[in-house]
Amino acid sequence: MAVYTDVTEEELSQYLRGYAVGDLMSYKGIAEGSENSNYLLHTTAGTYILTLYEKRVDGAELPFFLGLMQHLARKGISCPLPVERRDGSLIGTLAGRPAAIITFLEGVWMRRPTAAHCREVGKALAGMHLAGADFEMRRENRLSVPGWRHLWEMTRPRADEYEAGLAAEIDGEFAAFAEAWPDDLPSGVIHADLFPDNVFFLGDRLSGLIDFYFACNDLFAYDVATCLNAWCFEKDNSFNLTKGRALLSGYQSVRPLEPAEREALPLLARGSALRFMLTRLYDWLTIPDGALVQKRDPSEFIRRLRFHRHIASATEYGLTAL
Ligand SMILES: Nc1ncnc2c1ncn2[C@@H]1O[C@H](COP(=O)(O)OP(=O)(O)OP(=O)(O)O)[C@@H](O)[C@H]1O
Ligand SMILES: N[C@@H](CCO)C(=O)O
Image (cartoon, rainbow, N blue to C red; front, side):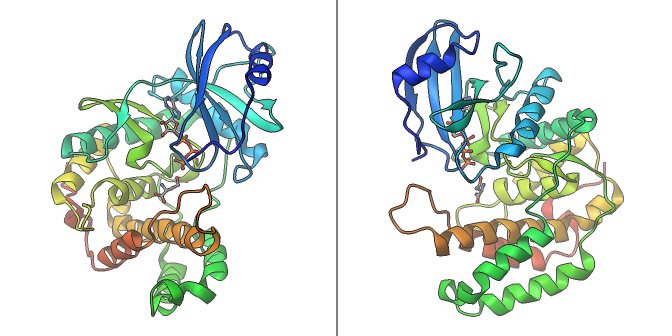
């Protein structure tokens, strides 16, 4: 459930006067998502998404996220276009929260993605990497190695409550990353959270990417690694080589990976698995049962981490020579 802040019709109608989006016809809260409050709006001008940013999003970072969506949409990437207010700004205040309106994208996310969907995601990810090249703002990835360490300091004392031996195992991961994590691979703006629930399809055709609230500047190949983790494992946590091959060949049909990126992929995939394991574990240990925030299962990513530890070459993910 993701409507943390209630908005009255009167407040909303008043707020919409700041935009050229016509008059309010109806609105309703959207249950999906976990970070912010989202509403579907119907106005006399069309359909929109209204987002009220909750406390897990730093208001100072909104110009980066909304500016990026505007930049990408203008470059032809299928993603929501933030609607400008009458004064030209993208961010307002509603019910005491920073708020924005973005265009509505048609489509549904795939609960059971196929290899064809994976190929489309690979292509779209590479397209986004290229389109972000001339975006002028920067945002550091706060969920890279130092951010993981910080999360780990907070979760380590209770990690063995989740699974016996986990604290020692993850200590070992950090020891491995300290030496080996690359910082000299091609980089730019990455999505950093391109999971199936953030990609819409109409049939097999990708209709849009959403949720840019983890976007940042980091290694392109790290974003590819995150997509392998998010799209190419089955419910039983086995890796699907056909999906991996499809995702990687889709990506490379738009932006070929350099030799050093290919070589780093197993380590990057292991790091990405650790990142999602840590945020999930943190939520698991800190969010009380029955709270509105949805808790996701950390164990899926502990298993992915173990899988990647034994990968010697990216060919095992289905990467082929061009
Ligand atoms: N532009 C859009 N067009 C259509 N639907 C959208 C759009 N943006 C968001 N939604 C809907 O709102 C839901 C939540 O959006 P989003 O994923 O951005 O929220 P969130 O709170 O940041 O969640 P999380 O980060 O946990 O995924 C989506 O699953 C989708 O149903
Ligand atoms: N995609 C993340 C949630 C944050 O958007 C996860 O699956 O853990």
